[in-house]
Image 1 (tube, rainbow, N blue to C red):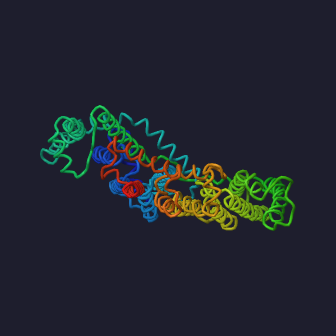
Image 2 (tube, one colour; image 1 turned 180 degrees about the horizontal axis):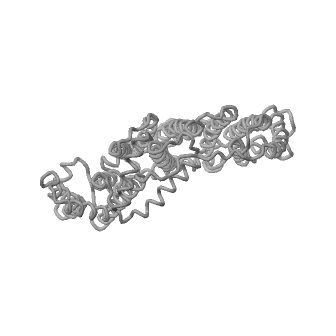
Length: 515
């Protein structure tokens, strides 16, 4: 943040603390009311509809407008973050996978608060723990401002009353009326919508969107969500306006490197033996496996432990670089550990590929392959930092994980899982038709529990391979029918709730039942 802008902001904060008056009250108050109404419209009973990317765009717009009110210019990296946030929102309304939707929202949460901190503070030297700690700090300390909207409203009205001058003519009275009207009008419209069928039909026609509110089930839920988001928005905006987080990051490289050299050298010796075994037994196939082991069972055993060790190695390299004095020997050992980590990553990936050849794909198996790719790139960043201390590691990690996850999310893993499994199951068609639930890990049973993302390939292959009369396919279509009827009962089939995967699955089911 520029010194002049920071000085202006601190003066406003001091004035706020001394006079108990929020200089941004009109903006935060009205803005939070509008945002709460917008949030409720977009997301009430609608966690993954077409309104989700618009909600993300509106949230970013509100934040940048807030920065403008503070006379702060958004930093250039905000463009990447904003585009990523909107793409995550778009991905959410294109998929039916609850796992992807959950991961999307986790990514949105972190990236948004990362963007908030990035624009309000000089964060060049911040690391991931610093960001996470700051986010937690903001969220929990925001709770102390729960009564601040009422305090600010009374302070605002009293100040203009004492000054005894006109606020844009009759403007202050209009402003007070608007503050009262917004929440009241919101609640009154909901009641009137339920009170008269003609009025509700007219209201639907005006805003081109089927609200479908059941008085007994939804009126209080909508009111609660509106109030919750209003207070949450107001409290968080008030909290981040207090520029009190420490920007500087203490250099903790004070430990004697001999300590680091000692324990990392011992670990390196163990890794040397382990990596030799991986090359001989797994990659080369020159050794003899223990009795009773197949390559598939050998590949499966210890896979997750090996992945965990890879993450330990990444953390080990980063911690050593941040805690010990610079030392060439330590750097050399950490480089060796990094190389061993790549062998372990390759071993993990090879093990999983061997296992997939025998037992086919699941979401978890595909996800860990993606995670190994991410880990290899994160390790590359750590390697660079060993020899270049000024390398912007945190930003590199944010960009890398964001881009790779966007690819993973938009790829719709369930589609490719169904495509791979059905194409390979075809090779064993006769044995499968004898007992669809016998082979491997209940492959057909797993297909019936995939999301609607897999519907195009399942319907296509079921018809092509003659599985339309099989129990597993009937179960899959019944599952889609059940979800459609459930959404219909909840009024979740309006334009607001439109989701590409669900819409595609519904059309495929309709076409299948027609023919």
